[in-house]
Image (cartoon, rainbow, N blue to C red):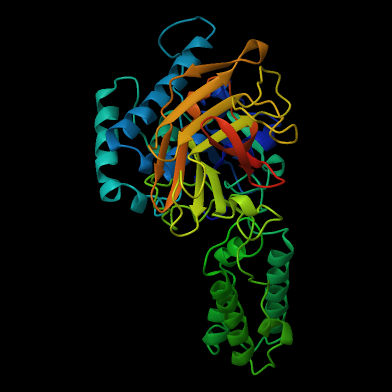
Amino acid sequence: MAAHGFEWLCSDEAVLGWTLSHFFHRDGLGTLSEPEVLYRPYRLETQQGDVSIVFRDHRLSDLIGFTYGAMEPRQAASDLVGQLEAIARTLKARQSDGGTTLENPWLVTIALDGENCWEYYQQDGKPFLEALYQTLSDDPNLQLVTVAEFLDKFPATETIPAAKLHSGSWVDGSFTTWIGDPAKNRAWDLLTEARQVLANHPEATEENNPEAWEALYAAEGSDWFWWFGEGHSSNQDAMFDQLFREHLAALYQALNEPIPLNVRQPVEAHAANGDHLPRSFIHPVVDGRGDEQDWDKAGRIEIGGARGTMHRSSLVQRLWYGVDHLNFYLRLDFKAGTRPGVDIPPELHLLWFYPGRTMHNSPPPLAELPNEPPANYLFHHHLGVNLITQSTWFQEAGEHLQWYSHPSRAKAAVDSCLEVAVPWADLHTVEPDWSLQLVLILAEDGCYRNYLPEDTLVPLQVP
């Protein structure tokens, strides 16, 4: 890229972290504890000359890409500016002179796939962007710049040898989104074999055999490998599989070569969805209707008719779960016609603990608890939901196995299904990257009746 005249590159904080062997620690509000490592440009030394490189703030970029679209536009804009102001306060606090004015200018890079997120915003993002730019314009301590504008005034002073730069994408600092999974690797093998066949035909140039080359270029698109295997899935997986192989088949046909048998066979099996972990952040509207697009990337656990002997809760068909930067979400799908308080108990109790964390825990605040897992576990947080009135109450465990009530902004809605959102802000003792284990208990008049999902706990991770 240096040889072709590019002046700067952009990557992700995870790539910088691996490059410098530095762990980016954030506090409970998401602010970096050592911000000066990330918020500066670097000079990448290559044999073709130096190139500047900046690294995006992964969290701020994801807030725009995946979270703010579900918020009121002005509130979302205010939150982002507040995040930037918190970064500035931390930078000022770490200055050697303790001054209230920054000694050096710092660059917070926000970068994302700009075409993906706006369809989830009100009016395609127009109210949010107008509120954001107006707020930034009114703030004397924050200045909008392009990367080139910043580098012109403040060239990079810290250097990174090109050989030391970590190889990875800005999805997770690695290439596991596209390689490593057996299905992804099979697809790469098919592409490699097709490329070699084309290489064996030097007479097939782009000018006299454009069909072969166009088929190759189409098959080389990275999105095929994004969707193969674990990590990402959709209702069109089988179609994507077929289209990828049709491009390879077109290459062989353009060269008058036989189409290999493995190109005619699916790269992977496309069975009906069963239990699976979350595939991405989700941002559902909590209205009790269970919009399938809202929950497409959520984790899923089959319950009714598909798991063990849990006949008493078969009216609950499946459980969906997932997170974003604001909440963790749950959804229960009921069998059609199910009436809370008549067909199933009227109370749902969400209880969770944090494995490996030292904190107060208490037994479920219910009567008639059986002395068997998970009813005899101890939990740190409890959210009760009345399925008839859709009201909620929230508790945190304290000393001597007691529960203490706390205010909560949790939402619950029941219509064709139950949807629940629990704000991370309600969980004051919890820090980023913590894991939690969740169980759901059905109860009536404060008395235990059943739990779900059977023989498993719902796993969630704080962003």
